[in-house]
Length: 492
Image 1 (cartoon, rainbow, N blue to C red):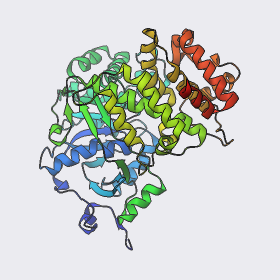
Image 2 (image 1 turned 30 degrees about the vertical axis):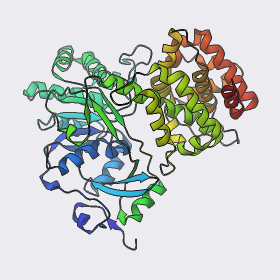
Image 3 (image 1 turned 90 degrees about the vertical axis):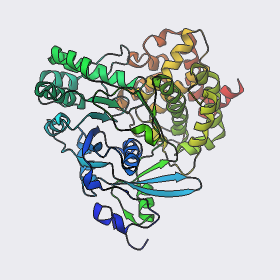
Image 4 (image 1 turned 180 degrees about the vertical axis):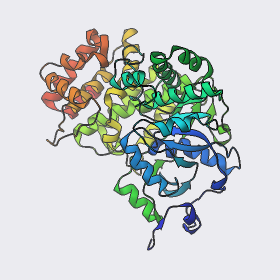
């Protein structure tokens, strides 16, 4: 394109005919949802569903107001406000790319240290849903007890100074206090993160935090608010130079474009205390059994991501598609899925676990999706505990072998040592990186040092069926390399 058109309401009519633009009057939209965590995934997934609902002429009082509680969110706010909160979505399909501009988001709350603006926005009676994508490890839950980590400095701060909260959960508590006192009523808290029982987790965090400063408010929240469980699914790479170039190729000057695969799924428990948009009219599944959908997706897709990304990082494979193209890594993925992950997963309406694995293999192998192993491997301390270890625990409780899952854990330990097999460094890639790296270095000589991380493994360190297999694999990886360990597993 010779001319790049800056993305804004005023320029939508100038965009190339091949670019789909909103077919509704954005000036007539009014807010109904505050969404915290305006990263790529939300804009390619939940915001897209609302956008398509608005295109049907429905529920124009459910537009999204973006929000965040981190310094980086202020930068995202600047980028999106400069283009009227519009986003260019670029669908990546092996057969070709297509672009669509979405407009379901209409504003972005000012990011403040005390979150006063966020509290005011959530306290607005027009807001009936507060949703979030804050990453799996962002809920302040103790992985061993499943309860709120009341000793965390952020939680202590919000409990002691509830009028100036640091976390989104503290802001929710403050807003709900204002709504209760004003007689406005509750809102629905909707987690869109990859957590088993994410609604129940959000409830524990919000109610638990409220209880530390105001037990009566905690009881009101627990009774009046709803926290539906949900399952979300779409592969959405991080935005870098290549993604920016794709937007420019469509003639669009977008400061924050998003690329995504040609697949989306959203399953939600129909439990909304203050109403909801008619999401079922745009393909969202409303189900009383979200747990089965969650378990299938989290264990097969998200767990499978960790199975691939850790050896991929060690071997210098840049993308998940590269991992799927590597014969040993992809064969490892397939065998672990068939032998140790799928047997612990139940079918859902219209999909068996085996068929879901085949679908995931096709999606992961899509070369048009430049989903980096680094992005997928990020925050392994949350993702292994949430995606792989629950199934591993179930198998051990049943007396079943975990040879492949033990190898997956050994590969994570090797990755966290911080170097690839070609000698290059792996940059810190976890909120707990320094602790992980220290444990990984000790584990090179004494594998049990890795399993001694009790917040991750708990009593699994004393399970000989797992610990012995882990030690053998980690020793083999360090002595003969990752590919030798993978080959030994596949031959065995």
